[in-house]
Length: 209
Image (cartoon, rainbow, N blue to C red; front, top):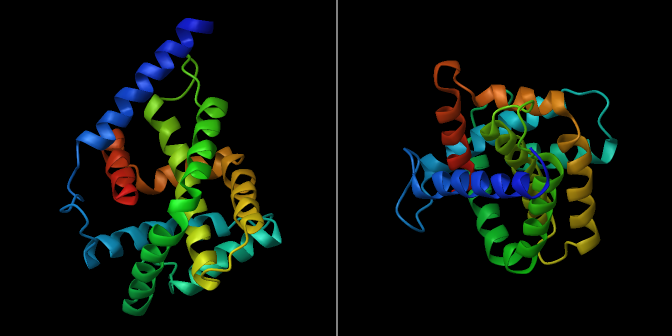
């Protein structure tokens, strides 16, 4: 697929997939603005599984590993994926802090980051994996990066330097986005063979709420 036609097809498919994520709320959806304990627990369980899976690589850079460990310790995540009540409460507080004080200033940064990753890594050709898998790889990278930023912000509320945020995002792109083996492993954590696309879409819904 070449040039102009390839770009048009990419944009069309991207719009279709985004519409699926936004228009089909799935079983995890709640009333607008409602963030229940059950939803928080499901999110935190998924985040814990992603972080522990990533942490298994002995070759990670020390700073990136420290960023993962900060989130794991702060939310009392366990390798079995079951969050404690105290960790759950802390996660809900940190999520609110992130939404109130980080996103209003840094939302454009996330948008630019995601757009750049889309045009670098998602290509519509016959040889590539299914289109939805490419989107899941991108979202895995985003979810892990967001968790690190949330934990760093909560550890230094009102005093998180912009340079630190940029470095977290840069390291995350390197240690997650450039590791195709990990992205495949992360996807397989949440894929159900008999209904892979549906199960991955449900996972994405869960962490995008």
